[in-house]
Image (tube, rainbow over all chains, first blue to last red; front, top):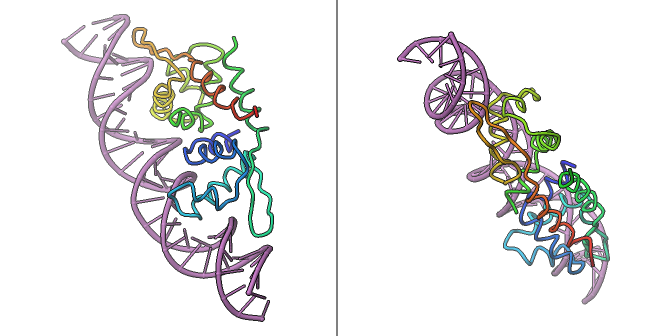
Length: 85
Length: 85
DNA sequence: TAGATAATTAGGCAATCATCTAAATGCAAA
DNA sequence: TTTGCATTTAGATGATTGCCTAATTATCTA
């Protein structure tokens, strides 16, 4: 649970998730959407992958990233417990 | 949104929220539940208050903290968008 | 008003985090 | 098999975070 919240507690990473919500993208496509260096974005992607918020698949020389919502379901469950008496 | 995720990305703060889910508590009662110093817990409470996840009310020399779930509702909404196509 | 209790604020320190550049790896095409 | 593109890994650095002790503020009670 901690790794999950940590992963979500960065605006760049949340923005990456928003992008992947629309469609799968390569690491390069994601990096190009930001002013940060490619290695920085690569590191963010690694953190998202460790949190299981994204999945990556290599296709030739490209690596495609896509959203995985199973952890978000867990998170919603966790939060929902608080909203009920 | 960032301050909210930041506030939730610490296990001690999440545990405080769990405690306040059961019932309202004073700063001292919360601090006693942890091995950390009182100022450390006070600081955590401040971060939770800034994120609007808790509300504090002074009663005499005690300050009572209670859970506020409105932000969690927002968070659930934010997450829910990802789980739907 | 003095002393005790509850809690916060202030200041400092070590660990973690986000970022960068440079180097390495993986794959494709010439 | 060399060259080039896509991406990650390595290593360094400044900023942020979480913790501590000491000092301060607020309130209650004798």
